Length: 228
Image (cartoon, rainbow, N blue to C red; front, side, top):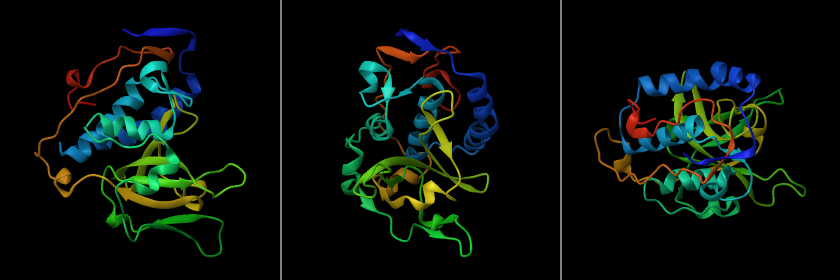
C-alpha cells in the first residue's frame, strides 16, 4: 500500500454524489457491453485509474507523486499497453494520425456546439483541445480519451473538476468541449477493435504517494471481473 500524504483528504460527499449520478451510469453501461478488445481494454484501464487511482490534479509525474494532468493521464494509460506517447499536451498534434471528418459545429441560432462525425470515432481515439490561457488558441492545452458512444452520447474520459479524483467523464460538447475542439487523433491499429485479439498489459502504475485518501480498498484489475 502506498503512503498517503499527510494533507490528503477523502473525496467530498458532493463529488461522490456527482460521480454516482454522472459517471457511474456511463461506466455501468460500458461494463455491460464490454467486448474485451484491446481498444476497450485501454478504455477500461482509464476507468480503473478514475475509480482506483486516486489521482489529484497537478503537473508532476503520477508514479512519483500521485498528481496527474491531462496529457500525463493519456500517456500513462497508453504506456500500460506498450505505446510510448508524449506526456506534453502541446505535442499531441503529431501523435498517431488525424481522424478525418470529426469536428464540432455551432448549432444555428444558439451558443451551443454539437459533435459531428461520431460514426468515424473508435474507442481509444485521442481528442485534442485548444489551450484556455491567454493568449488563447496558440497550442494544444487539453487532451482526452474517447470511450465510445454510451447511453446515446459520445463520451470522453479526462482530467476535469468536480469528481472524487482528477478524472471524470464528459458527454456533452455543447460549450467549452465543442468550442475548443481541435481534432481527433488515432494511435491504435485496426486490429485493436476486434474482440478476442490479444494485447500486452504492463500496468497499472501505483504511485509512491496518494494525494487523495482512498475511501475504498484498492483492487487491481486482475481482481475485478472485467479488469476495471
